Every structure is written in structure tokens, then in C-alpha cells.
Amino acid sequence: MVESTLIAEPPAPAAAAAPASPAGVRRRLFTVAEFERMAEVGILAHQERVELIEGEIVQMSPVGSPHAACVNRLNALFHKGLGDRVVVIVQNPIHLGERSEPEPDVALAQPRPDFYEAGHPGPADLYLVVEVMETSAGYDRQVKLPLYARAGIAELWLVDLAGRLVEVHRRPLGGQYAEKRTVTPGQTLAPEAFPEVVFAVEAILG
Picture 1 (cartoon, one colour):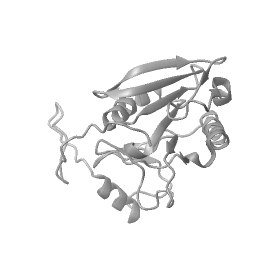
Picture 2 (cartoon, rainbow, N blue to C red; picture 1 turned 45 degrees about the vertical axis):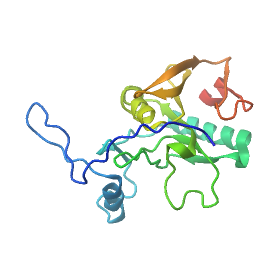
Picture 3 (cartoon, rainbow, N blue to C red; picture 1 turned 90 degrees about the horizontal axis):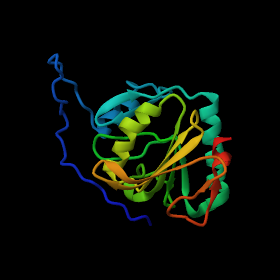
Picture 4 (cartoon, helix red, strand yellow; picture 1 turned 180 degrees about the vertical axis):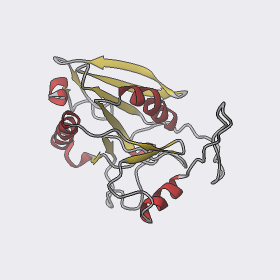
């Protein structure tokens, strides 16, 4: 089990609103329960690619074929390298508190007999989260990275397809990661929880 620190925030009321913008417009923030209920009753279409980030419903970027291929490679590599030591989660929700339910491209979770049927995995369940960046690099670095750090996600990989590199972020602290390492083709990397399982960067990037 990965030891990670959950940076807790005080619970907000169900009908909370974001601070007013300069124009005086206030935004209604949603809870995870409200977000999931909207999907259940059809307010959010089943095929609609959205995620809940800090109470806001965010439209996810379209998945291009290079992005999809990278996710497929990661899925195959993790299954081959780790087998039943993990649950490999592909583009499914993870639970990060009352107001955030992102859908990372890939995540490695602790094995559980119900495969998380009773509820989405949270920070204490997750060894690693991976985001593949094709058109979303700014969003992933500026929004997703601090979100994961605040929640206490122990390790985050940002796969930069355009830059042909992988950023490895560890040691969440104060909404950022205290440790960052960049690896490029010709180098290798391994999840911190499984240091003996090593992957070539080019096997991830293609």
C-alpha cells in the first residue's frame, strides 16, 4: 500500500458558489454526488466526455489517434509488467474529495476484490496517475497537476507526445510536487511503488 498524504480541505456546502468574477457573475459549483446524479438521469449524456474539477464540469479534449495509441501502449505495458499486482484503470473516474472526480488517462490502483464496484478509487488507493498530453499540455500542467498534488496523489506521470518526453512528479507538497524528473527516449522509468518494473521511454511514446 502506498503511503500518501491527503491534503484535506474543509467541506463546502452542497450549494456553494465560486467567488464572484470581476463582472460580478457567480458560478454554481457542483458536488461529486450531484455530478454523478446528473449522469444517472441523463442531464449529462453517457458518451459526453466531461469531468468534475473543483466543482466545475469541464469538457475534456477530443482523443486523437496518437493519444489513444499511447494510452493503449501504457495499458499493455502495465498489464504485462505488473499483472494482478495492480488494477489498471483506463480513462475512468477517480475520487478526489467532495468536488473533484477527474478521469486520468491511466491510473494504477491497489487490487481489490470488487475492482472498485463499490466506489471509485481515491488517493490512498492509487500508486500512480498518468496523463497523456497531446493538445491539453497547458491544462494538465496548470490545473490537473496541482489538483493531484493537493489531493495527495503520490506519483504523477505527464506524457508529452509533442515534446517526446515523460515528466515524473513525486512528493506532493502544498499543491505542487517537490520532486520532478524528465526522461526522454533512451532512458527508463519505473513507478516508485514498483522500482523493479522498468519501462523504456520509447515503449511509452512509440
